[in-house]
Structures are given as C-alpha cells and as structure tokens.
Image (cartoon, rainbow, N blue to C red; front, side):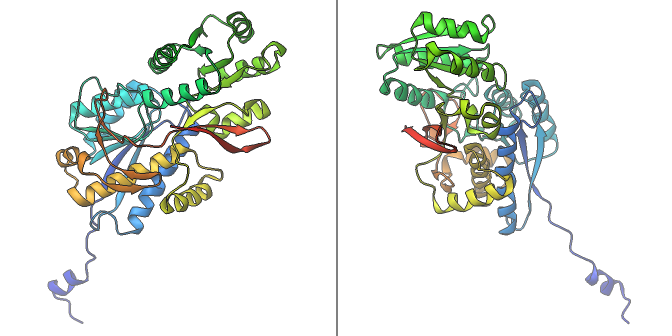
Length: 372
C-alpha cells in the first residue's frame, strides 16, 4: 500500500465551496402577520432549493439566513446589522411596509443591497438610492387601481376605518386625493375612538356605500366585519380590504361566509407563465394550501438575485450597480427594474395588480373584479 504524503493528500476530500448567503427578513411571530410571513418564506425557500438543484451560483450553494422581524422596525434594523456582519451578499424579503422601510434605510447606510419582496409603501427610503430595489408595486399604483374599481362600481361615498400607522395614513391620503379628484368623498373613521357598533352608526350617518378596513387582523377587522354584516341598515354596504387581509387562510377561518365578497388587492397576473404554473403547484404542495401572491413574490426574489449573482458576481457594490441590468422571467412576468417618478428605489414597474374577492358561492375560489 502506498502511504506517501502525496497519496494521503490525493485521497482527502475537496473542501466544500462556501455558500452564497442571502439575508431574509420575514414576519414569523405576532404581532407580525404570520400567515404572510409563512408564505413569503415558502417562496424564498423553494427558490433557493431550485437554484441549488440547478448547480447553485457557479457551483456554490445558495443559503438563506432567516431573521424574524415580528413586524418590529427596530428588530428589523438590528437584524440588518447582524446579517451584514455575517457576510450576506444581499438582503431580501419583508412584508410589512414600515418594517421594510426601516430595513431599507439601514441596508442603504451599510452599503448592503436589498431586494424588497412584498412591501409597498412609496417612501421605502427617504432619499434616492441605488442599493434598494423592489418587486411589489408601489402603494400609490395599487391603491389608485383599487379606487378605480370602487368608483367604477358606483361607490362615490367611501368610508375608511383606520388605525394609526404610517402605512394606513399613506393609503388614506392616496385614496382621498384620487377619489376627490373624481367627484367622490372619503370619510375617515378613527378606530382608536370607535367601537364596531359606532362604526355602523357612522356609516349610516355618512350615507357611505363602501367601508374599507385599514386596520389590523384579527382585531379590530373581524369584529367590524361581523357588526356590519349583521346590521340590517347596511345590507348594501360593500366591505373592502385593499391591503390584502382576505387573501390568506386566517381570514377565511376567522370569518367564514362573512369574509366573502370583500375585495382586496393582490399582485398576480391573469395567467401564469409556465414557470408560474410549475411554481404554483410546488408551493401548493409545500404549504398544504393555495399559495398567496406573497409566496410568488418570495420565489421571484430568489430568481432575480440568483440571476444577478450568476451574471454580475456577489460583491455587494457590483450587485447594487446591477439592478438596471436585470432582465429575467419570474413567475408573474418579465422582471426589469427602472426609475419610477416619485419612487426612490429601483422598481419593477410592470408588476401585475388585481382587485379580487372570495366567491360567496365558493369561498376557496377568488374572483377577479378588476385589473390595473
């Protein structure tokens, strides 16, 4: 037997290539919207598995380093610091807009590229930056499309039940300006001062034909919906939830039939690409339920970052410089980033926007009511 040093060396296994790490911010515990976080993480994880099954990034495995934000901006900012120290090539994820804003500001300050998966707040950063890009459409685009749906359906006196939040305040301002410019009226109902029963009285007094829920789930959204549904004076009032609460199973479980016929925004196309259809089936199997648009946003996030890493490398500065050169097929269409007026980050400008609801005759089926 040959026992020379060279023979021993030749039998030594080759060292495993170091992984390319992506820091993932996801709301996985309350008060974060756990259902959205679960779907977002499922999409991210499926995307990573598929990249690694295809050989990784130049032979290097892709690895997610997940941190739970729990919908807390300070916790998210601290996680960005930690992930930057761990050497991640880029940051991804987050569903809650105010949390994503904190993460984006910190990532920009640290020179860490961030692809925001699912948050829509227009002011994602306080100033223009090349380090942040976003897949989800800006709130102004989606909520104006929602207002078009309401006005087209004959709702010109619209009430919003609103809680204090930068996100809800921004949505209220978008709706008020857009509706007023088209001859409509928006009435604001302060949910820090009103019970669900008082909301019903206010709807009658204001002669509102639509009530939009700009509030948290389950409270006060669930008791408000139940109160309105049970008030015979409000039988013709439309309940809406533009932020998308009715998309996820939690809404249906809590409200049952009362949760049907509540229009909301989602970011899916009329028809999936072949990639989208395949991913839909894989996500459905992984989640044990129909995947929400948030899961597709997670998968598209990994598709974009993997393509960018393969084409331009994993150096943070090069990644940040490369957003405008992205051109990749995602589950919901061809993804490219551009500068959109009024938006300080690189934006996928053609992300699909729909207004849908749960079909009262078949609660697990979604009806497309409007496309923007």
